Length: 364
Image 1 (tube, rainbow, N blue to C red):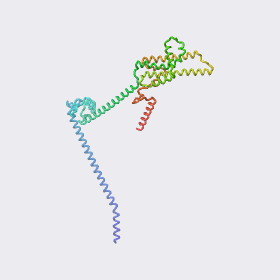
Image 2 (cartoon, one colour):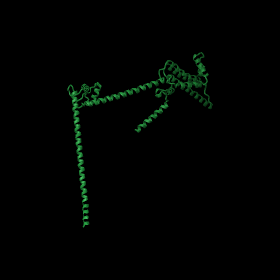
Image 3 (cartoon, helix red, strand yellow):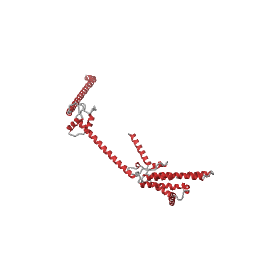
Image 4 (cartoon, rainbow, N blue to C red):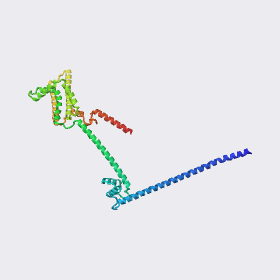
């Protein structure tokens, strides 16, 4: 009997368990919904309070702006002129404002652009104060930038002046003009061989012939005079302290002397070819060609001499002058420490810098 009762009780307990769990779940959901509704109600209430505070703040600001507007509008015409704005701000902020600063304020707040502030454009004193502080900061930053640029320009000018002192590119003096002619004696001495026919037939009493002959004998009396003159002119032309006209003529004299080598080379090759072919160049042709070369040389040297004595760079010699000009150093060929940097190295450095900037742009 006891066993039967226990079994019945167990059966009753197991049959009532699912409904109890369901009821508990429903009650839990209802409680959660109630909590969510409560939180939503609180959030809505907070938003309403925040909106009310914002509205109250806006009303207070509007009232303050309107009150300040009434005080500033001394002539009661319903708008604030630049003069009224200046007087009102100076009285309220206890500061003295320049007309330029007042105009900046007017431009910042005058939305209509009519040169006056209406009530809907007018702001509180604090807004004006904040704008004035902003303008002052911007003006200070601009002043710092201007001072920085001025310092950089001053340093650049000092550097350019230092480079200019290193490189004598100024107007040649009278002594520079005379000295600049002397390098052309080098190609003249080496070119006298082409003028042998003309000089042999010249009048012996001609003083020019006597002077040239004396110089030629002196030139040839020095061993390796041609090599000495070549290296001396080449070294001296690289001295930036020497006036540019003198340096230019040194380089041009070297180029002219080198140019004299080619007519002799051509004449020698023609002689070899003619000898191999059993043909001889007529003496008259040889004399005429050498005379033409010598006369051309004299014309070029005459132009260079006259131009140099006038203080004008003789840079109109075909082919040669352009190459000489490209060899002449300029201020931008010196680095910040005053050291000469050859064109090839400068081009290489600029190319490396350009490639580095392109790589940096790609990384960005």
